[in-house]
Length: 282
Image (tube, rainbow, N blue to C red):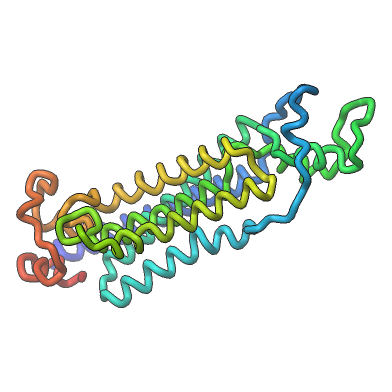
């Protein structure tokens, strides 16, 4: 009993540490949101790059976080409920929240250090359409500050991090890149739906004149990088037979996972048959 109690305590401490890390990442993200960016000099000959018209956001910031965070979380929890798999649901939410937290902090840090003006910066800086003799901006200070945070695109990085993670999660659950998933195109299509939506969302930033094409590409790459990095922190590679299971459900069964893939059970039922401790948590 004492050993079991110790394991439960360690598990609770581990979960608290995980939650604490997410809170810290979120606090850093909020602080960076209000940090003034580097004021980059805009030369007269390049002003044409920043004279695109101002327009409304096709996807607002609020809708962005619904699409990149709430919808993936809801789908993961629904799938975990249907599969009656608390362990997988918990690990997936931890991985997704880590993805979004790291992506948000790094994206904002780059925005602040680079200070690239948005395509509509001219109208943010000079809302009257004319440059005063002092060449000082006479627009809304908040809009001007936000107008200097073009690179990389936050919409793109968040869309590709949240929805990119969801694509990896679906691909693992459907075994898209293993023998049992080969020859079944519908599985690959299902896994690609989230990342395709992320691409569509990112492209609205170009048509809205809110970002340059370089901002969108780098933002997308950044988001996909953190999606893959955090997914692999909690789940095996997609070409492994146990890719649908989080590491914490695998490591109690066999010590050296990477060296014994062929020995690993494939389903929750098989796990319950070989390992009673894991069976209680699945």
